[in-house]
Length: 101
Image 1 (cartoon, one colour):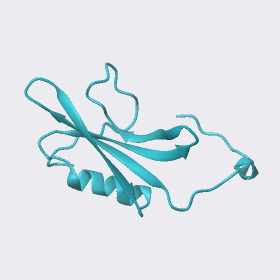
Image 2 (tube, rainbow, N blue to C red; image 1 turned 90 degrees about the horizontal axis):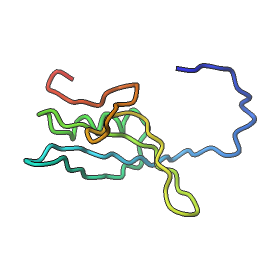
Image 3 (cartoon, rainbow, N blue to C red; image 1 turned 30 degrees about the horizontal axis):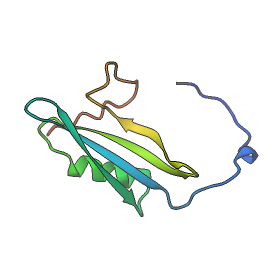
Image 4 (cartoon, rainbow, N blue to C red; image 1 turned 60 degrees about the vertical axis):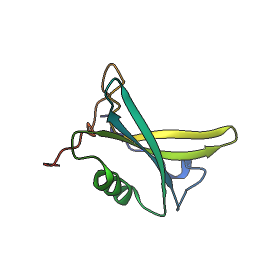
């Protein structure tokens, strides 16, 4: 983790109504498969809680992204979670769900 002071005046815009995307990953009989849902009208805590509540408690994973519209599509900023198809899991919350979560 890198922590540093920044100039708050360097931000050129602020978004008061963010949109999130959640990828739910499930293990199929031969491969993983995913479904992607867009979540609006929520803050990051609410979006994350929704993803946990809607996940399969049998060990599925999810990725939560901030979705930023751009001129050529959407940029996804990864906030938390894990993708079981990645060779190396990034640092941070694993996004693995279980009944104990």
